[in-house]
Length: 102
Image (cartoon, rainbow, N blue to C red; front, top):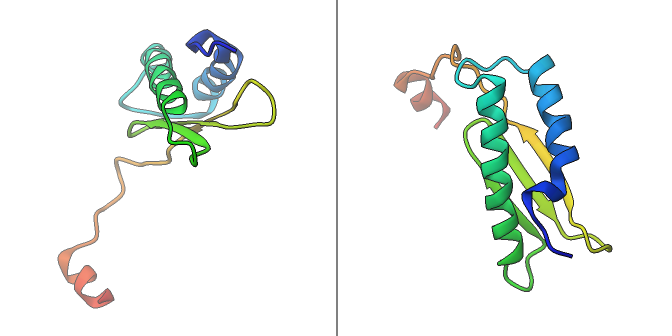
C-alpha cells in the first residue's frame, strides 16, 4: 500500500474538527493547524517508512501536535493524532523551588 498524506485524510479531518471545537490555541488558528497536520503527517509517513526493522512507529511532532503511525496487522498503519497540552500562562518554577526538590 502506498502511504500518502491523503491516506489519513479522515483522521486529520476528525482531529481538525476536535481542534476547532475544543482546543484553544493562541499560536495557531484552525487553518494553520490544518497546514501543520499536513506537514507533520508527511514527516510521520517518512519516519514510518524509513524506520529500523525493530521499530514499530513513525512519529512527528511540534509544540502543539504529535502524530504517531503504528505498525498494525493490516497494510495500513494505525494513526494517532494528539494535541499536546500546554498553557502559556503556566508559571515556570523558580530556581529556589527547583533547588528544594533536589
